[in-house]
Amino acid sequence: MKLSYLMVMAFVFAAQAVASGTVSGSSGATEGKAVLAVSDETLPGTAQGNVPTAMTNVYGRDYTLLNGKWNVIVDLYDQGRKMEVYRNRKPQKPEEFYEYSFDGGMRLNVPGDWNSQYPELMYYEGTVWYARHFDAVQEPGKRMFLYFGAVSYRCNVYLNGDLIASHEGGFTPFQVEVTGHLRPQDNFLCVEVNNRRTADAIPALAFDWWNYGGITRDVMLVTVPEVYVSDYFIQLDKHRPDVIHASVTLSDAVSREVRLDIPELGISRDLVTDGKGQASVSFKAKKLQRWSPDCPKLYDVSISCSGDSISERIGFRNIEVDGTRILVNGEPTFMRCISFHEEIPQRMGRAFGMADAQMLLSEAEALGVNMIRLAHYPQNEYTVRLAEEKGIILWQEIPVWQGINFSDAGTQAKAERMLTEMIMRDRNRCAVGFWGVANETKPSPERNAFLTSLLETGRSLDTTRLYVAAFDLVYFEKSTGHFEMHDDFTDNLDVVAVNKYMGWYHPWPVDPSEAVWDVCADQPLIISEFGGEALYGQHGSSDETSSWSEEYQARLYRDNIEMFSHIPNLAGVSPWILFDFRSPYRFHPTNQEGWNRKGLVSDQGQRKAAWYIMRDYYREKRQ
Image (tube, rainbow, N blue to C red; front, side, top):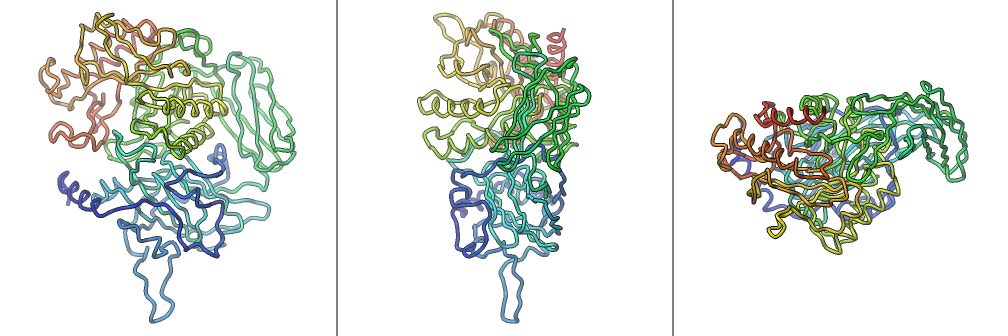
């Protein structure tokens, strides 16, 4: 029987009223046991310690997927650690019994969120224990890692009863080495997952999208040589069209010969790593064809070292700023953008695989975009790689979205960690043109220091992209008759973005034809969010905001497009948003029902009238 919206809400509120605490702290459960790469500082709810970032290009390695049906225990009162459910004990004597069992109970798909798999878990926020068994043959001279594409939001990982890793952050990968800790048969892997919102989390207590919980991306058992290529960064020079820079980092601080090959370009380079296991080289590439939205050229690239060999597909392009223009391969390029969440609206659940990536990207392609803002967090690698093949520039960001405690050092450390994990996973993807560090934050000395630190972290890892943040601080100044914004932090960015919902949250102070902007006049400006809500198939007055009609949304889009012509430094626009998406923010019982209805496409995949207006605008901008 399908539960109604109100029935589910009643269940959730009753459950949340008795839930308390978060997955944090340590217990005596691991005393005397081998614990791999984990300390109290890395347990969820705290800033993470020196946990190494995940290896680059895990899909180019030798791996076994551990996806599928996992057994689970829903732990609303956080009693599982006290009971040591991760030991999966069975009665061995007539007088023994345990008040838990993974056998015969609920099962969940991995990857996948728990909210969309059982109606009882639709609004659930708390702890769920995931468990499965697997075999693993340890090869001589090989190392083995457990790799998680993402777990939302925080987790502890246990292997054969021992705590081996912890991670916080629901949208970036992590790994833990398990060499020498695996059995040939019947390994028991248990993951304690918690998605409860907290003030020190990123995002924090309130955010305008669904709080999906679970093991939401691939889980893999990865096998690599004893010394392997852990990271590489191969990219075109920031400005020059024919100079490639390459750096390689080995898993160990050893000197080894490394070979880099790009056969189609006739390039073979031999490198020798230094005592830190690192090597770099720069060289000219004759007859290089640069990647662009019109011609997304990718080259086969291989990196090999001491029995380790990785194959890649890499594109080369330049992206930079010239005054108020964004240049792609030296050509001024207007960013015809759209945003979407990592969600399949028809399934009401997280997107996670190639089929999901194809669905989302194909609808964006039909709109005529050359760019996508992956809002508001790093999305899965299938989406990023497919966008690259399709010639779509990407803006990726971390979920520093309102409500963040900028004065808390632990929160800052988490943000820097998330930014690092995002950049390290995708900095070889030439489709990524923008790294975003924040959305809709308010000026303060603490905020400025926080974001400055993020920019320093990002630029220490990658200087080839443009750094951006989105602001919602533009206002109409009556004395000048202009739209203005005053935030000194914008000077630190390559590109400034503005979210402005004229005609929706903000009434028009002047006719759109007279809406002149004077915002960051010397920098490229992207209108990163605009639009309004409409229920597909609902018709009404184009003059009434409260009609929630396709006609009003269509008028709103036409008015905003008129306003765009009066923004002299406009470098791109991005409507909010491609699809209607789920959000507990949205209370209207008939027009929203727990959905943000700003999508150009409904939750059932139907295109609203505004979709066609935006498509036609992008066709004009392409000419």
